[in-house]
Picture (cartoon, rainbow, N blue to C red):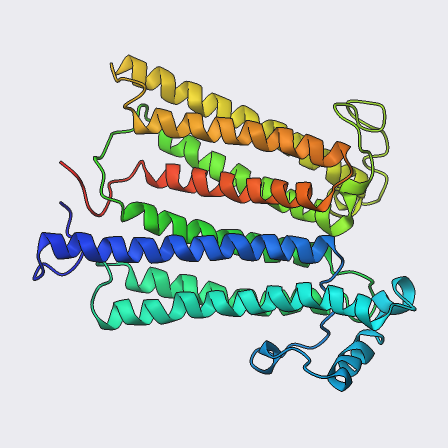
Length: 363
C-alpha cells in the first residue's frame, strides 16, 4: 500500500482516514452538482438578475416583511431587465424569480462551509492523506474566486443589458466544472483499488483529450444558454434546412460569430457534440483493442469498462440534447441535459485518474 498519511499510524487508520476524506469530497461534488442545476434553473427562469446587490454575509437573510420585499423590488425596478422586459411585474411575480436566485446564492455559501470546515478539521486532526493539504486549499481558493466571478457575471446585466454576458456566464460555469473535476480527481485517487496498466501507450493522453473536449463542449453549451440560442432552429438533424446552414459568418470579424451569433453558437455546439461522441467511440475502441491484445478479460479491465461507460453516457447525453432542442427547451429537459453534461465530466475525470496509481493500492 502506498504511503497515504503519516507512517506513524496503522494501515487500517490510513484506509479509514482516506475513506472519510473521499466520502466528504463526493458529498461536496453532490452539493456542487445540485448548485449547478439550481444555477441552470435560475438562468432558464430569467431569475438571475432579481437580486441586484452583492451581500456575502447579510444576503443570507431574505426579505422578512412587506416593506423589505418592496425595497428589494424597488431595486430590481431600476435595472434594464425590468424596465424593458418585465415592466408591470407584480410583487408576487418578482418573488417567484427572487427565490431562485436567493436559493442559488444560499447553496453557494453552503458549499463554501461544507468544503472549508471539514478541510480544517481533517488538517488539524492530521487525517488528510499526505500531499493533499495544499491541493485542497487550492480548490477552496477556486471556490472563493467563483464567488467573485458570480457577482462579476450578475453585474454585467445591471446597467446596460437585459441579461448577463454570455462570456461571463460561460466562465462562471467552467469554473464550477473545474472545481467539480478537481474534487472528483482527488477523491478517485483515494479509492483503494488494484492498479492496472493502461492498455496502450496512448490511453492516458486520449483520456486527457476527452476531458478537454468535455470542457469545451460545456463552454459551448454555456454560450448557447447565454444567448438563448437553443430557442431557435429547433430541428434535427438539419439546422435551418441544411446540414451546414447559411449565415454562420454573418458578423465581422468572422471569429465573433462563434461567441455572439446565436446561429453559429448553436451550430458549433451541435458539432462539438458529434466530435465528443466520436472521441468517446475511438477511445473505447482503443481501450478494447489494447485489452484484447494484452489478453485481458474485457469485463475485468477497469479501463475498458470505464471507456464503455463514458461512451454510453455521452450517447445518451447527445440524445437528450436533441430532444431538448426539438421540444424547444422545456425546463425539466434542459436541466436534465445540463445534469448529463456534469455526469459526463465526472465520469471522464474519474476515468482519467484511474490510469495513475491510487494512494492506497490493493494487492
